[in-house]
Image (cartoon, helix red, strand yellow):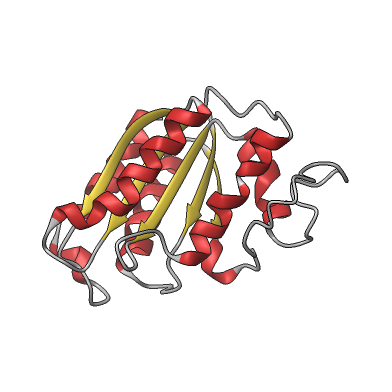
Length: 180
């Protein structure tokens, strides 16, 4: 039984990346894993202020926002999953704010290494290289934090709500639970 943290980036509650996320979560729970989900687009997480006061007051961020709710779960997790659509060739700003504030682990010398991580992502365009805007930063984050990338599910050519169900994206996302 592993602790899994899923951080989503989509503001669309029934969007394509959320459908893949739900498929993964249900499969992970069926395997007996403990899954905690944070929907960044529906939380109050501001950008990093680069004040370097991380963890000085007992919280990950000295600016009191919802990153202070997310951070302890990341620290305790065995597996961290980023599930997101691509917005303008990158992470949506809501998820990017969470990622930027992960800087606090480095500033405070928190040992978050040796975790495993997964990327679940989709985009509107048919060109799969559009997903490089989330894949490359994800891979660099994992390398820097010494996280092992278990796998990724990336699906292109989905935009309208439900388009993901015309692909094997949800099945592939669910299969990721086998890797944990």
